[in-house]
Amino acid sequence: MSTYDASFRIWRGDAEGGELRDFTVEVHDGEVVLDIVHRLQATQASDLAVRWNCKAGKCGSCSAEVNGRPRLMCMTRMSTFEREETITVTPLRAFPVIRDLVTDVSFNYQKAREVPAFVPPEGVAPGAYRMHQIDVERSQEFRKCIECFLCQDTCHVVRDHEENKNAFAGPRFLMRVAELDMHPLDAAAEAGLDRKSSAQEEHGLGYCNITKCCTEVCPEGIKITDNALIPLKERAVDRKYDPLVWLGSRIRRRPSS
Ligand code: SF4
Ligand code: SF4
Ligand code: FES
Image (cartoon, rainbow, N blue to C red; front, top):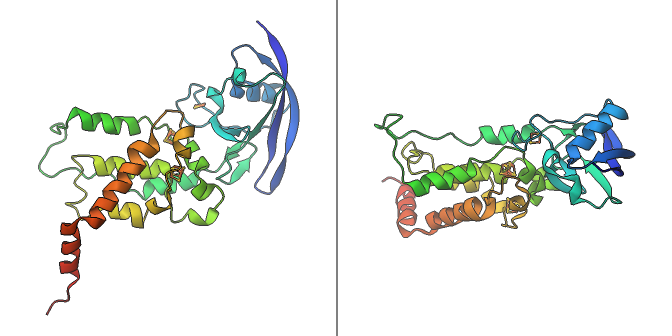
């Protein structure tokens, strides 16, 4: 087994401020960035704060920025980098720092709460739901999400624009709206909830200019932009320009005589 010393630059600090600190850490064959952060904790910086759980790319908690790119530390192999390279690890930039590599991601939980849940169809008992396989597969892709929030972190709409956070749910939760809107059994419309309008008006779909940066960083390989955001935009636009919908809205707006 070969080992070598790698140069790491890690952000240390808290909500009041902080700085990048340099460390030299031993690396063994087959290790990932999270192993090195753990070795740092064990040997040189026992108070270094880092969040992780599974070390298998499934819990979504070890998200950080490695050389400026949002990544899961447990899925980023050290062999990705040249041995001479200095590897910089910083907390997710779009969320407030708690300490060191740990950020407060509660923005995402707030946005999750703002998306109304699946509305069960009336008169169909749970267990009696039937869907075409193609509809099952479509939502299965979105359900691979591990809620790492790397897509939320990378999206330029909020990354450098704190002021947009109120009006924009971010790719992960627009994907959730899309999933529900495409669900053939969701009875939101019958319950008076228009998911397409709320995508535009409440969740900020119009802010997304389909740059696909969210898709590029998704560790689950979910095609967020192509399979969720663009179809949701198309459905919202279809609805807006559907002549029958337009006529219906004109009739509803007419004052009663
Ligand atoms: S495609 Fe849309 S949601 Fe994804 S990063 Fe770009 S602007 Fe953000
Ligand atoms: S869609 Fe992908 S990048 Fe976004 S939270 Fe889910 S798994 Fe993470
Ligand atoms: S520790 Fe669970 S995804 Fe990295």
